[in-house]
Image 1 (cartoon, rainbow, N blue to C red):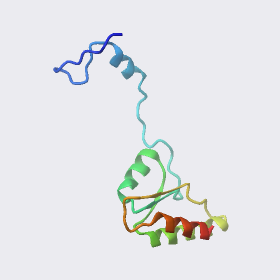
Image 2 (image 1 turned 180 degrees about the vertical axis):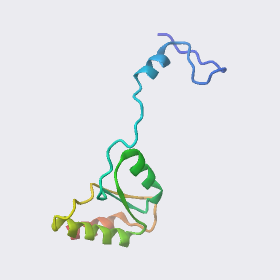
Image 3 (image 1 turned 90 degrees about the vertical axis):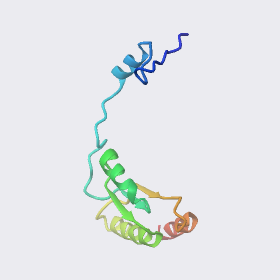
Length: 115
């Protein structure tokens, strides 16, 4: 087995053809990964800094809620809209677990109660 030789002149360059093969096999990155829809598919709870990544890179339209009670209002409204067949429910609800104001157990119980 031949170990790659890393040179200081070109960081990341190895003496084998392995990097050239990897460059040829690498797929070009095309963003967004999917077409954005008109209706929000993801609810971001206390995650406003993640919205540009989710929308521009992944392609999910997002709604934001800064606090737990705002998120519960949006979830309740989304359930009502889904029951009236006006729009689909969120595909994902992303919650910032590092936010100390959000208690995930309590939020889960409230959502279960709404459903």
